[in-house]
Image (cartoon, rainbow, N blue to C red):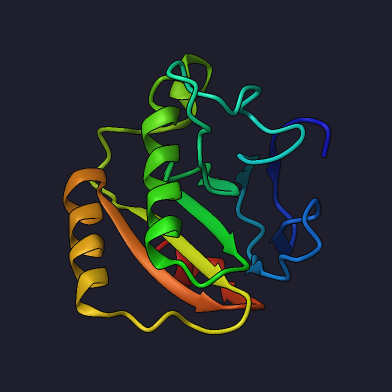
Amino acid sequence: MDDPCEIVGHTKIVFKDEEHRECKSQFIMENEGKREIRKCKIDGKNSIFENDVLANGVLFKKCDWLAIDVETKLEIYIELKSTYDVKAGVNQIKNTIDKLSEKKELQELRDNKSKFLKIGYIIHSSRIPKLEVKHQTLIEEAKRTHRLKLRFRKTPHTEEITDVIK
């Protein structure tokens, strides 16, 4: 994929990390109805962020993919994890949401006034994270501050797109 954002309508839309072989996580959206999805690469080569360093010199930690349902503009953030770190995954998605709000060229793709929550998937390569009390606080805070509903899944995870967007 040369363009970091493209509209796809395939029956299977695959999100995986092709740059890091140690990350075996992948998320597959079954798309039998061939809905149009804008698939944006967020992290790595040819991504929408050409500079990984913030103004203060700190490395910008972001999620791997963003999928936007063209019809509803629902945003689906996907973080593919090879390590067991719930907090880091949640923060990467939140950082991405914050940084995307600064990119003027993406504003027409997103609907920040939508009543819909944003969906965040953390796909883990070896197990579904055990959600402890400290994680529940993190999840509630993400919902309150970023309108983000988090879902944790084990790889490879396949889900029908109509289930993802509801």
